[in-house]
Length: 405
Image (cartoon, rainbow, N blue to C red; front, side):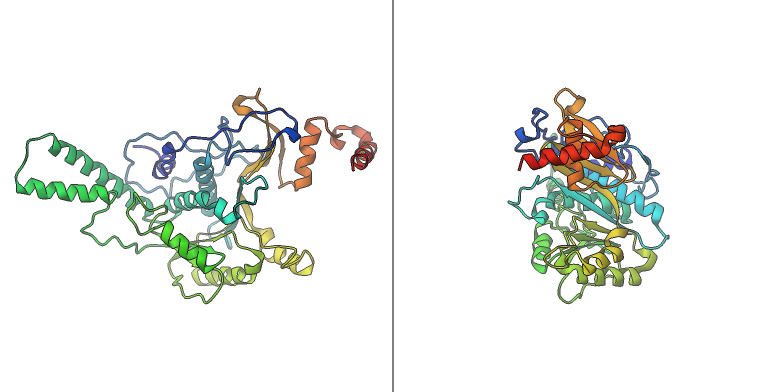
């Protein structure tokens, strides 16, 4: 038997992916031009993590009651080992948040994942699709009743079929009955452990993903293939797809989780309407509402004036950040709820290739992040470390900046 947290990692196939490391470089920001899509392994101490998995089959007990209590308040956040690791710890934090917020008003949160480092070759939706698939899968196994049990049964059936088929192949040629049995076992293996003689239609609670438009939702419905065999499906069968725009015809009477994937400012009205209607309709049956990489305030659409401020007050400001990861040219900024936002800098002499340079209880702005790097590397004077010279240091930095223009 293995713990439920390990089972999630096993189901997602994390053992099949290896972590890609950042290439060490000097501390100069200007010398760094590229960075990988996810971070190199760093030993974890305080963040919500998973245990190392084995290939043994899981127990049949549900994991919904095994979500650990939130830990890490006021502590820094470690970097993830890989994209798989980032998706799983984001899902664990979200599930823990849903458990402890359940029944206390609406439960809304957000997840931000950006490893583009400013590269606009792909859209945010495209570049974060793989993370979303793994995050949704782990979240469903944690919060959707029956999803974990069904996957466990399929894994058990697959392992049994493989063992029986191997035993039969080692024996002499059997009679017609054995040939039929072999064909049955091979069919089960081909279907990833799913019994082809039974109706495998999912009839339980649903995790619904809202895409910005119907085209994106249709592509995900085809490519993510939730109703396909377990060895081909990228998400569990409890996942359904909808779009923010257009007429809403989907049956939401079974929605347990709703996720808005990369919602834009142009869809903000639709997003609010869907969110409020679903919360009113489902009540306490709705475990969690998640915004993944939201961009609901935009200068060209909502503006930063009254409309943008009101949208922030109604919706955005109340979203609790469950997971945040943004890679930088010289490091990364990350956060796992309930830990702090933590800035890491590449350092080839540090264990794992990174060292923590700042931990904050709030999300720093882009200029603040760059200032943290400059203060750490002596490129600017830190007002907090200058005692009573804060004003003079700031004035000196201003003059230096002007001379460089």
